[in-house]
Length: 100
Length: 170
Image 1 (cartoon, chains in turn cyan, blue):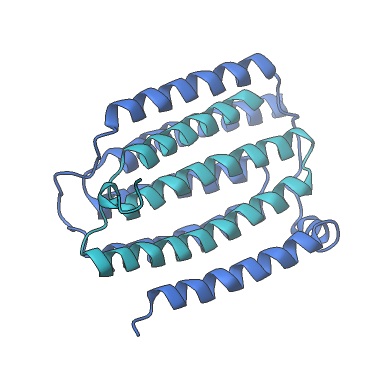
Image 2 (cartoon, chains in turn brown, cyan):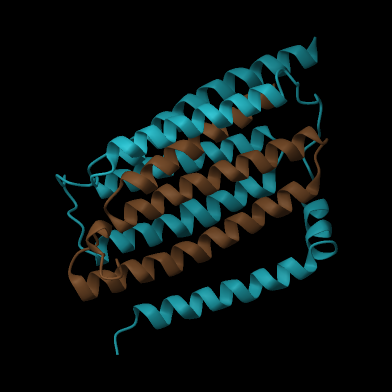
């Protein structure tokens, strides 16, 4: 196996996630795209861990990313829920009150 | 010869998983149905777990299945349900930035792809790496990285309390 095949898969997933964050309107779908990005990062971490002969530090960081992602989803969905409760819509491009 | 056969099997399984993941990821960001997007995301996350197993990270793969496919997906489906997003097809799931977003993503992929190919052109991964024992992962986590671990515990507590405070009705 080449190192590059993992890095390129990860880059592809990352860019698809970036596209989703930029182009999606629905708040829940934006959060899903962020999950794609975080998974791409994890693949990178584990690929480099494998390259260094199975370095456990890469695994620890991947676990940290998974835990932070879980916290992010919990808070993110609570915020989306609050936006829905206040505005009856979760279209993110309508949230422009803070625009100068 | 044994190693070569092993390598071919790994490459074939990698190709299948990678094609499946990229296809499913594209469906996540293009489908018009929120529930379908969540289900395609399950495919991507399972593929990622399979990739972790290919990379000799069994504990991370199991954690991925438990935390992501088990807990995060349930949260997403709850979020979809509570915000009453149309469960069927909705017509406008994309905002007006679609064309610039395609451009940004393509440029980013080109840049990152070029840098990665330039830096690690045909570096092979070492063969015969044994799966990292979970005891090694836990030893590293609770010795070298114990301070980040504590910080993460506090972060998770804060996030859980914050989510409850945000979401409850007064």
